[in-house]
Length: 311
Image (cartoon, rainbow, N blue to C red):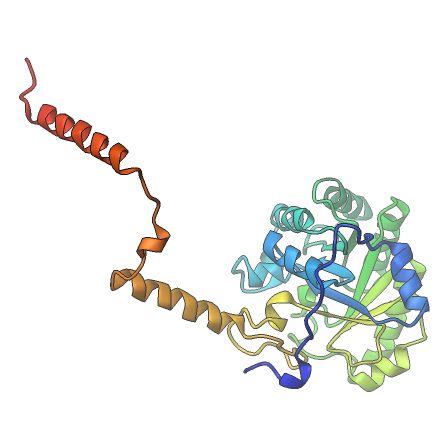
């Protein structure tokens, strides 16, 4: 699907070296001022440089990288070491945005001690400013509290939580019944009390989101949760169209780069096969005298190679 002209982003100035890094204090100030918070996923150095230059506030190294860049069928297969690799790459590409990394499935559920150890690795080895964990049930709330107590900021995530989507009936919107919406509300309150500095709210009816806003005092970042949240997050590959298919219902494409990449590579392949590439302008040169001397030495080498070897 081509990008909607009505949603075309205007050109933005690339942030200069004097731009101040986004901190928790910055996020709090923008939230209090009612300024929408912009969050985007990134998974490598190149995507990090792009979102940094575009001036986003928060960058998430999401476990969705399992599907988008590592080729897993879902998020549950990605390991801690793989997520750390992605986080380090993104860290090297960022100057200004606040960097958050997802704790992958299986890296924090066992105990609070395990959760803290994993979170420490993402800060120490990955360079993350904070970590994100999914769900708001009692165990996740305890893990979040333990990580916060260890001095590491935590972002919560409720509604549709992809790591446990099977238990939720698949990648489906949540909060579509009174009981489900009430559960999400309770989870948000519990995560705030545990010390989370912000909460992602995913795939929840917009009308439910409107009722939830104001329930907690920390920023709520929406994805498929309507316009009432304090900010929005989209996956880098979704918003730029670097993937097959249209993605979830809530995805707005601002470019269609997948097709452009295919077109570009196909043009390159065609030029190679038809010997149009490389052209003279793509080639290095050598001084004619140097070339002549090389040819003489090469002729001598060839003549020597034709001589029979001595026994």
